[in-house]
Image (cartoon, rainbow, N blue to C red; front, side, top):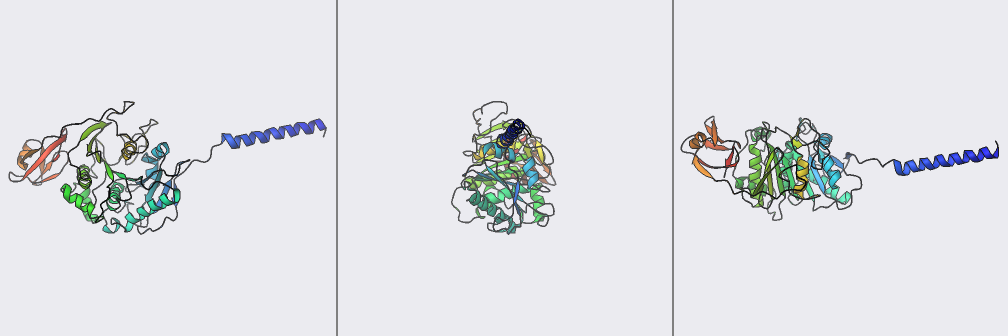
Length: 398
């Protein structure tokens, strides 16, 4: 081969090698993070499976959110549809997604009604706590910024975790969930779901305080999301959850601020210790809002209802990222000031009078508050109740 041809071939090979090196170094990004199972995370008395997601480039000391799926779902379904994946990437926090199995529950529901799974140090609650401990210690996350969220049975299990491990979670959110210890058997669970169980705030609060006797530390703040057309978990449960956690946090059941975001109205209690979101027209599911905007997230589908991105507002409530309260509109580029309203007037009357005035309705010989569906007792002129209208057509006990 002529010397000039050898030189030319050598130059071509060098050029090709350089292009390949450039392509590898600059044009091909590293593989993106993915949801992955964690084979061993410590004590697992509830026989749950742990999945985790850590966005690329997550720094040491990042927060952690535990996300609990609903019945018939799994970790992958909730990760893909709920919007929490997008928020983890945007705001820089890790996700732990516990997964239930059909061997524990035929519908893959977390067993939020079984005492053996809802007691501190036992069952599924203890397994979820083990996952948190593993994630914090193994990945160097911030133990003071751990949060929990969940849908339906997962929402009820979120209430369990907030009650049994107040020393672990800084805040949490409950989507279409149930109050802690509303039920202690599968039979009771159905009546808790619908029509719901009415207890006083103190009675609900006592159940939470009994979950960790003697605990005197700070309590996690709580956001509650409830569809107002939910026939699986009755809307009254949102109010009962409000009563439970306002009592535990030591704030009154009268809202200190109100507002709207999309189709949801919200009420804040105390110094934003508890928020109750009532999503008009929404059935059973978690609110999502598919899209690329900052306040959008999730994928609509079964139990993921296209209304508003709950995860976006929960992240703000938790204090992650921007850490500002949810805006009262979704069109403004900056959150408008919080709207304060005077407390609604309380009206004391007989159950008969409440029904006649349109503040309640009667069914099966009992009176129920219009909107909240709270059981007021027997429908007659001797039983009385004190109600107030917290939003148009929505009456509940004072």
